[in-house]
Length: 505
Image 1 (cartoon, one colour):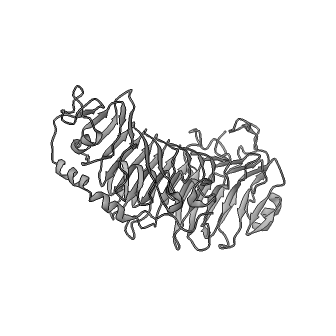
Image 2 (cartoon, helix red, strand yellow):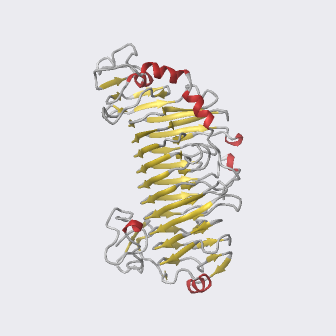
Image 3 (tube, helix red, strand yellow):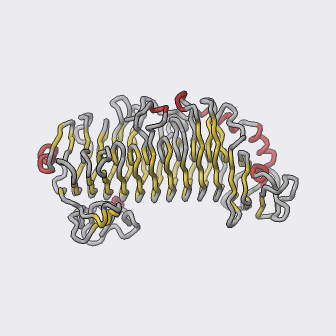
């Protein structure tokens, strides 16, 4: 499933960045005070100006040295060929430092001709151990490197701090052409490196696309990052993982190295595949959403399609697990390998524990190669209930090919249907060709149904349930803390007897 080792984000690289001459300059500028609450940057300005609307600054990075708590920097439309590193933090009393587009205009931060990256990692926007920062409304593009020693990023947040909001940006064409030589690039990344976490992180409304990232990911929270929200982003056409929630890679110190207490909701993720990524040598292993060692995370109401793996919860680190993750109310279809997967990709890596998968709709259309639900190595104490799994291909409803744990998951109250071929469940590497045989052989799915769920418009990919659907009332109410308040569409989750699948009738 996965290559033998995931790229490890080197802590030393962040130390190098934080110790650069530019960061030292930030500290010198940090004591400046300003009476104004708003400053302006324009391509027609000058950094010798006072930064007013009529006499704006020329570079965003100049503004980033001077803006302090409670101040907003409005950036006018146009193209800015520079990288930006923030010098100061906002605070709870005075408020955020905000960098945003001037209303109605579209500033572009373009990496064309910008040095990358000092034999290290650098973002076009860099936030190193800062707090109370808002970054909103930018197009961030064209930051590339041909060297495996240099790692371009769109937006890079490192160190520790709190209250970072990354909103409504477009990040694209951040690329390494050294993927075959372990080169990496990053779209949006938050990396908690200290015993004090990076906390209260919001990444919402962004579009991230056309990335070439090597072993790295489109959007990442990794290490000691807590209380994060990743919502309403559109991530597509990238050659590695869409959203990665990672732990145990040495980014944070021992005991503080795990993405925790997060919500991933309302995102649309598609065309995520490693098929053309030289790092994978032709293998498929790029997830739409990947909890790689995360814990206490809810993944809900996401639309994920045409990815190698739709949603996965596991750990690639031996002796570690993804744990206490709820995957609910998602619509996942046409995965190249599998819609939802739990457990480690090999016996030599980690696994998963207490993964709750409820009220999802999984679909594989004719010609799509993927399976519905997969159980891999070292999966334990998990739940797969109230889901609809519809196959129009020759795939498996369940693919559990190992016996590494005797009872990895409790499966029940699901609705299965195969419109193309004989139905197939694989349990402990034994194949069953009917729901009755599978239930008798595995002890699973005793209340589940094999029936056409009668979607409203399957050719149009409308997976709402019709009034006569056997999925209506087919579920089990596992409690509001488990099933959540709303379905995929944001409607009330429980109406009478709970339905199976992502939509409540």
